[in-house]
Image 1 (cartoon, helix red, strand yellow):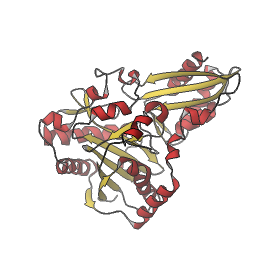
Image 2 (tube, helix red, strand yellow):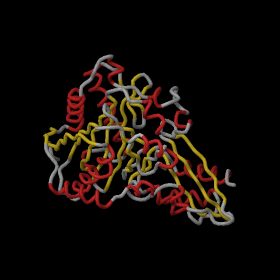
Image 3 (spheres, helix red, strand yellow):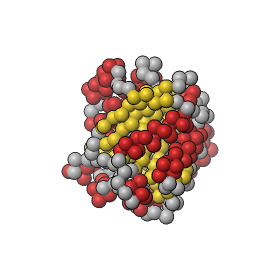
Image 4 (cartoon, one colour):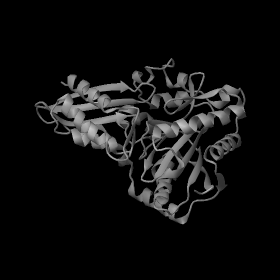
Length: 361
């Protein structure tokens, strides 16, 4: 096990980083052409980065974003919606799985409490781990994590809000259902989140944040972070991504794109569920003559590999609308070697599908 990891210190646009640069680093690491890496990212401007499963036509006000120069991108990762702005700091951790516990939930449980300890020692903010992926101070979220395994590599990120967010600009860009806050005292993003500056009552500079993260990660993993730079291979992969991925990629997982016009005799039903102490999942199910014609899950869904839930969708197409048969197909995907679904069980997805079917019209 190496005791040195590369540290990249990047000043980025969240959309270019999500769509082009970070995937290039991941690819190089998976191919053995890049070392274990932590990338510190501070943001140039407001931008929205979607995980693989949110439906941008439902979760984002795309027209508002276009009018206010708020870029929107999608990333091949299982998280919900990240809104970045100057004052939003992200540490991307792209390392071999030998450094980590075997499950995503265990990774969060390992990293977040230890990181909270370091932050508390440095700033005295009384931060604590809130399962399964948040760090809170007195019930308000200041930091969170996301990520998944990609082959033998973990690709994850820890985020810290160190300056107040421009909430008046951000709120109109998001279409977040009320169910998202069903298990929280806060009933809006502004009430739910808090920044380090607000807690400390003083300005916080970026160097403070970098130092705290470097100390935390070196302590947690027992490594030394050595400042480095992108390799030629990674820069070439980044350019490939720019040429390969057009803005239309954003719309590849939307209800409109997947279903198109509904054929005669097809009924549509939709339901939303807030995972207890977790994310929000939406299920849209099309039925015809007692069978599932098609379906789409969207929202904040943590699974590894990232396409695991798509496999559930494909497995259920054509299935009779029968709880037992649906569960058998869902269970088969859940039990595949190396597959992980954090925060949900097969019974949860079965219930969602049947609820959506019950609302079909």
